Length: 138
Image (cartoon, rainbow, N blue to C red; front, side, top):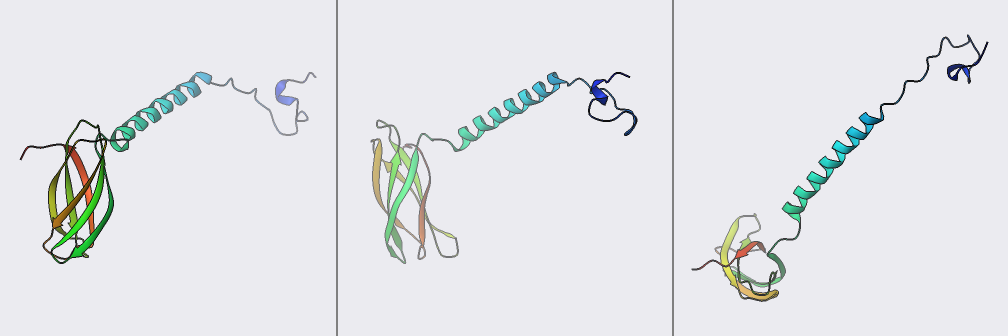
């Protein structure tokens, strides 16, 4: 009796009849990998567009002079040096309620530092600059 690939490891008749291994479907593995790769790239592009570097990037440096009717904030806006911007500045109370909101014009400069006193309707505990964009005329 000659040994086949299926009986090379096991004694004949001991574990039942062994089948020859099926040929692998490499085209299917390649297809699934390609689809997964394309999907990964599309997701990465979408997330980069949504969360990647923005044209106007505000960042609060500090806030101080907190009183019952206002708060002073220093923030930086990174943008093209030639562009002017308008930023929303918002203050919140201890309960999370919005107690102050203003639109602040930012002068040209690659990193414009802005100091602004925001009037509030109640005592604020924090201030944020949630968004900046192209300067709007008033």
